[in-house]
Amino acid sequence: DIQMTQSPSTLSASVGDRVTITCRASQSISRWLAWYQQRPGKAPKLLIHKASTLESGVPSRFSGSGSGTEFTLTISSLQPDDFATYYCLHYSSYSYSFGQGTKLEIK
Amino acid sequence: QLQLQESGPGLVKPSETLSLTCSVSGGSIGSSIYYWGWIRQPPGKGLEWIGSIYHSGNTYYTPSLKSRVTILVDTSRNQFSLKLNSVTAADTAVYYCARGEDLGVAGLGTFDIWGQGTMVSVSS
Image (cartoon, rainbow over all chains, first blue to last red; front, side, top):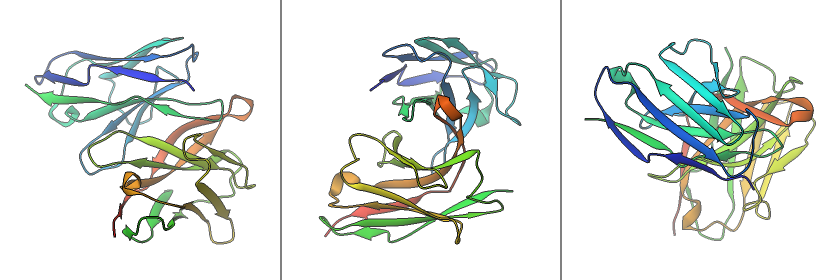
């Protein structure tokens, strides 16, 4: 099974900051990587798929990059709504693997 | 607009079977370009994929739960269901149903539409 490792587990930042979350795969997954945002008590929301394709309606301050085993999610200028938990997800090959999550907190 | 809604008991006794249904509205579960999946999240923890099903009935399960899980589809009711047997406290979680894209030969795609989730507790 492919393991997904996210870092950091917790990130403290302020409104307006630029932040980056990293997800590493235990073996190459090409670009089969998605990013989700989850607010407390809510279902996850798809932000990015195919490593860098922004889902319709997602603000352009969110961006994704990477391929192979290393991927990043960048938020260019944090807004109050962005404080949430973020998960990466490897998909395809008839299985899924989530990262353990990164909680983005207000500093 | 497509919506998914989970339903089922909120409390299950240890060793019994957890049964949930996901009702799909605003679209057909028989669409050939989507899979339908179950994902769970224990309290305060991360997300875990349980399994996915195609409208034809083809299923894919996570290895760690495969021996205890059955996912079925009922296209006439536009629903799919989850059964997890021999539950323990470790199965206590919010259970989500979701729509996943069919990537063809590349396999299973991202989950783009989710239900709101339903909390299931395992306790005597």
